[in-house]
Length: 271
Length: 299
Ligand SMILES: Nc1ncnc2c1ncn2[C@@H]1O[C@H](COP(=O)(O)OP(=O)(O)OP(=O)(O)O)[C@@H](O)[C@H]1O
Ligand SMILES: Nc1ncnc2c1ncn2[C@@H]1O[C@H](COP(=O)(O)OP(=O)(O)OP(=O)(O)O)[C@@H](O)[C@H]1O
Ligand SMILES: [Mg+2]
Ligand SMILES: [Mg+2]
Image (cartoon, rainbow over all chains, first blue to last red; front, side, top):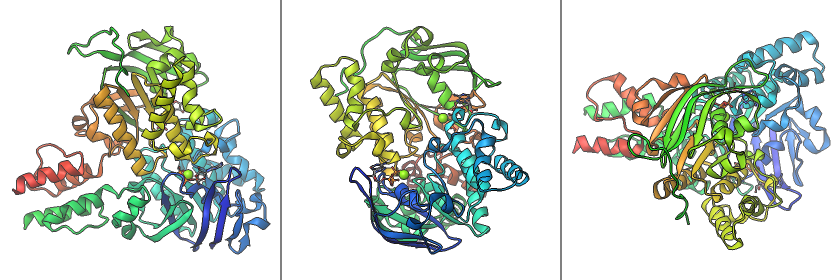
C-alpha cells in the first residue's frame, strides 16, 4: 500500500510542486494521475521510490517511510519509467541496459538472460538488441525504458506518460501489458495526458492542480464532469463529447467504446 | 506580427502555379553503424502554405525525414545519403544547417536537446540575437512567443527546472520566434496537456491560414489535427505509402500502419458494420461534422 500524508515538496528554486498531498493507493490498484502541465504529477511519481523526499509530511510504501531508506532498496519494490527516458540510459547496447539492474539485484546469469529476452520480445525490441540506446527513435527509447522495468518486475510500477511516442498498435499492446501486470497483483500508477488511452483503460483517476489533489474518482465520473476537466486543462474523450451532442436523438452521455456508441446510435435512428 | 513573415523569393513552381517550397527526390538515408536504410525512395513535394501531417508506426522514419529537411542530415548525422532535398530552392547538401534552420525551423521530439540558456526568455531571444535583429524586434518577438504558448509566468525560470510539458512549450516558442517559412514539428504535443495541445494546434493553424506558413508535423494523436490538414502522409519502414487529402487516406485501412484514426471515424466504421442506411456522404472527421450530417438527414 502507498500512503501520502500531508506531503509537501519544494524544489531548490523555491517552486512548491506538492502542496499537502493526502493519498492512499491500495495493492493491486490501477490509478491514473492527470492534470495540467506543471501540476506536479512527475514530482509525485518521483516520491514513490524516494528519488525525491517530502519537505513536510511523509510517504509510506508498505509502511516504510521513504525518508528512512535508500532509493536502491526501494527500487526492488517500486519501478519507475520516466517521462523522458534518455536520462536513464548509460549502457552500450539494449541487452546490457536491461540486464544491468537485474545483475545489480543479484539474480544469477541464467535468470537475467531469461528475463531480458522476455522483456525484449514483449516490447518488440528484438531487432535492436545490439544497438546503442541513444540511437533509438523516440518511441523505441520509451519502450526500452518499459522493458527495463518489466524485467525487474517490482510490485509497484509507475509509468510517467507511457504513451508518449507510441503509435496506436504499441498503445494497444501497452494496454494489454498494464492489464496483465495488474492481473498478477501489481499496483500500477500512470501519469498521462492521453485521454483516449485512459478512456480505454478506465482506471481510478486522480486529478492534480498546482500541487494539490482536487478530485479522485472513477474514469466515467471524472470524464463526464466538464467543468472539472476544464479547470485542469483537460478535454473529455471524443466519444463523451459526441454522446453529449447526440442527446437530441435520445443518446445518454456516457463513456462508450466506438462499438457501443455505434450500436446505440443505430438503435435510436431506427426508432 | 507575422506580416513580413514570408519574404518573396523565387521558387520553382508546381504545375498548379503554387510555390514548391519542399522538394524531396529519391531520398534515402542509412545511419552509420546500422545495416538498413531508415528512410528510402522518399519522394515528396510540398507547396508553400500547405499543412501536412506525417504519421506512421514508431520507428518508421518520421524523425529521420524531418532531420533531412532541416539539414541535420547529412550535416550532423553520419551515414549514407542518397537523392536530394531542396528547401526553398536550395539543396540541403550545399547549405550550412544554421542557414537552413532559419528557413525550416524544427521543434525536436525531445526538447532537452534544444534548451540551453539560463532563462526561458534568454532561450527564446538567443537565436534572434544571432540573426542580428534589432533589440526592439527581439523583445516584441519574445513577448509574442511567450504569450502564444501561455508561458509568460515562466520567463525568468531556468529551462532545466521545468516540467516536461513546460519544456516542450519553451522549445516551440523559441522556434516560432525565429519565424521560419517552414515549420517542422516532431511530435510537438506529446507532453502537452489536452487544452495546451489544442491551443498550440489552433495557433499553428492560424499561422498557416493567415501567413501561409508551411507546416509539416509528425504526430501519433491525430484527432484534433486531421480536420485542418491539407495532406496526410503515411510512412512505413522508411517509405511514404500514402500522401493525399486526409479524408481520402482514411478510406484505406491505415490502422495496420499504426495510425490512430479519430474516434468518430471508428464509430462510423462500426455503424457500417451494423449495416443499414447511414446519414453520411463522406466520412465525418470531427464531432461537428458528424452532428452536422446527422441533423442534415433528420431535418
Ligand atoms: N527540476 C526542477 N527544478 C525546479 N522546479 C521544477 C523542476 N521540475 C519541475 N519543476 C516545477 O515543479 C512544478 C511541477 O512539475 P512536474 O514536473 O511535477 O509537473 P507535471 O505535472 O509532471 O507536468 P507535465 O505535465 O508538464 O509533465 C512545475 O511548476 C515545474 O516548473
Ligand atoms: N542516430 C541514429 N543512429 C542509428 N539509428 C537511428 C538513429 N536515429 C534513428 N535510428 C533508427 O532509424 C529508424 C527510424 O527512426 P526515426 O527516429 O526516424 O523513427 P520515427 O518514425 O521518428 O519513430 P518514433 O515515432 O518512435 O519517434 C529506427 O529504426 C531507429 O532505430
Ligand atoms: Mg511530468
Ligand atoms: Mg520520431
